[in-house]
Image 1: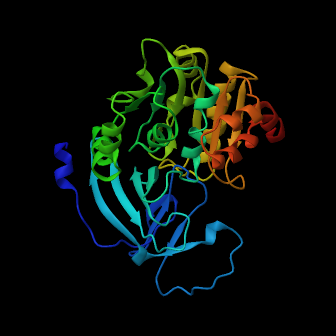
Image 2: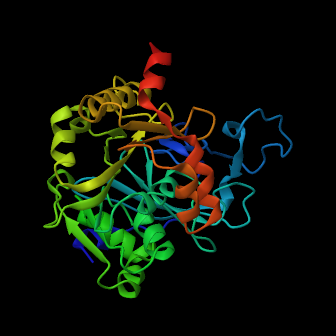
Image 3: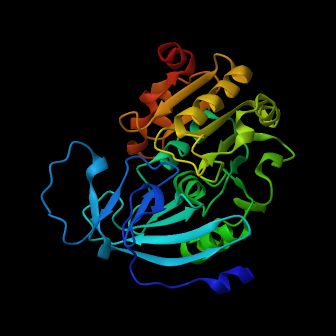
Length: 332
């Protein structure tokens, strides 16, 4: 364990959470929003009335006594918190453990004790292997290993994962609280974790696929709005290789108010479009207010893609892809 983990604080249950962002509002409130999992989540006081008129999941609450903070500390790169939601909570995140980074409290990893799928964009990432050639998959922005776990547990042994994470303390937390050590033991030879700049990631044979999940200070990193970065990443793919990217969306709030989620998403997609042209597709989760994911390459045969997925639940994402050119036209 890194020396920084000595400063982990084990705390009583915290106050309030919302799922797409985390800020300290009035004294006893913790509002959490992430780097999107799908629908916003808000914690409420235990004495809040139990019957509420709700028009969307945005109004859904979790009593504060059903959430606890397991650890929090500052590393060189992040303000790190690990939060656990009670299995008894009447909420989609019930039974989950969440890794929060940055002052906004973006959710960077999710794990559930009793199930594999996460019901958010990590599951979309797990649909990539059937539509890429054989070879290593890169995960840029490894977090505590949510994407790696899905792929390693759902797909056959020939698939290998090479992950990059800039913060060694995040990897330490993954091993301590998210079962990453167990994952490494059970899939030895299939998972390789690198500490360093994800944009320098490479493997000798080229990547068959690259999953990009790079956020800093609550926003998609600035480098991803630069077409040159996408040219560079494209050059590290094998023939017919693809890139799948979490591009954020309006559910993401950055520390910098001028880098709103929608704006940064649009700039990121424009940069990608200048490199990939018509071979760029976008999937938006939820009702349009949630996370969006981008995919490069020709759109695969959707029926064949569904048939090759390891679990039926993942097939619901396949029909959601739309050409970026159509989305761009509607927006203009």
